[in-house]
Amino acid sequence: MIKSMTGFGRGEYEDNGLQATVEIRSVNHRFCEMNIRMPRIYLPLEEKIKKMVEEKVARGHLDIFVKIEDKREKRRNIKLDKGLVVAYYNCLKEMGKMMDIEPQLDLVRLSQFPDLLVIEEDKESLDDVWRVVQAALGDCLQQLLEMRTREGEKLQEDFMLRRDNIYHYLQEIKERQPQLGEELRTRLQEKLQQLLGEHEIDEARLSNEVVLFAERSSITEEVVRLASHLDQLKKILQTGDSVGRRLEFLMQEMNREINTIGSKASDLVISPLVVEIKSEIEKMREQAQNIE
Picture (cartoon, rainbow, N blue to C red):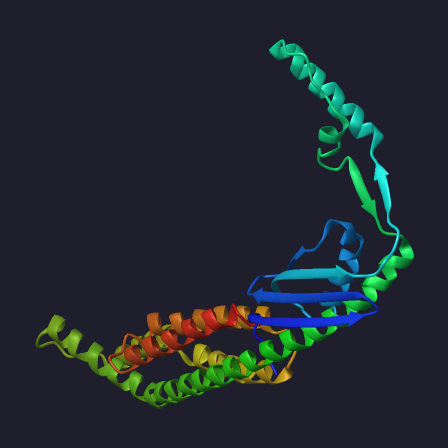
């Protein structure tokens, strides 16, 4: 079963004073792109989150929100970035010289500058946090995949309906094909008769010209290829894999074939059918952009 790239999931998990809430919103994208928002002190867990998501999701832009509440009583380490303190201090002194102002520094205000004081989690604490995040993320991904699958079922039904419509129009084109040669012969004969007046038409020459022109105008190969693409479309939709890119490429090929049919077969019966087929292909092409 194919999957949509649009979906939402939410998961929560709490254990031993730690609570994690994870939300994921996904939309269509050519690749798998993630934007993770979580507290800075837990950023070391970002790669684990990405790896876990990539195992379940092949394509889409995902906004991932991770909220962590730690109610445990524990001791945390606070690290001072000494090099950054010196850099800030020197910068303030330089600003004072430029403005001819004596810098008034106090430790409290200086400590509020970004990244001077960093709260560090020890490895054991991070492992505990990851366990609850992992559980919440698992539930969240499950919800996300279920929603993407439901949306995918609707897309698949729509694809199959449009595929059947194209197949029906193509059958009408096939039924019309045998008549094109005879009508072409009649039109050429009438045209030549107008040009030659009372002179007789060389039937053998006329037959040769009709054959040559019919070969150049034949749509048989394009019709066969388009029918083959429709069979391939059905197989792709039934694979259940990540097929979005394959479908987009197939739509391009189908559009190429029907454009050629339309340009070769200048026929009042076939032309409206070509328009209908192109309309169905365009709608499928738009839908394919939202399939994983």
